[in-house]
Amino acid sequence: MFFQHSPEVWAAHPGLVAGLLYAEGVAGKPRADLPLAELHQAARQRLAGGTEASFPEIQAWRRAFARMGLAPTRYRCASESLLRRLRTEGELPEVHPLVDLGNAVSAAYAIPVGILDVARIGGGIEVRPARGDERYLTFAGAEEHPDPGEVIFADPDGRAHARRWTNRQSGWSAVRDDTATILVVVEAMHDDAARDVPRVLDAIAGELGRGWSAPSRTALLTPAAPRFEF
Image (cartoon, rainbow, N blue to C red; front, side, top):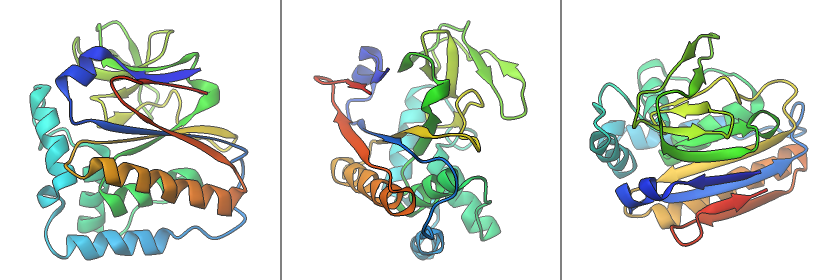
């Protein structure tokens, strides 16, 4: 299996820093408490100094969305949506321990974190412009077709595992109760992304090891080395 960004994506977004984490043995509940409250509090403390729209991590994704022809205040990257919810509602919903961990880390670092069930991604994922015939499954079970040119997570079977890049994940490969092997995708474009993306990977790897005793393998992708095989 593999994960990669297409040459078109690298060319259009030269500031992209992409980190991947692969982990097995993460089925069931964690054997140690996850630091969700601490991560949420770190995000709240940062929000106390200004809304998420002022964060450089979020501003960089807003600029990327604008380059893709998307209205940044209509389509938000996942970390902006989480921070906005935390600011307006005070809490983030509990979904699944792995998802909750990813969401909490994403909010704390203001960087999108996607977690995919490896058993459900087919032969691999390429982040690329859509042709328009790919199939996207909503969490409610409805199928959609991404717009031509829209950046998606595409597998070789023509399924879209995310729409509008970091805006919305698909139900195809969402974490479930029987998920045992995951691929974590961390992407950022702000000035300190090369420093922060490894920090996010380390934070998640540490909690997977502590909570599930699961070893992790990580990688940073570049235009010269754009492919992660697992």
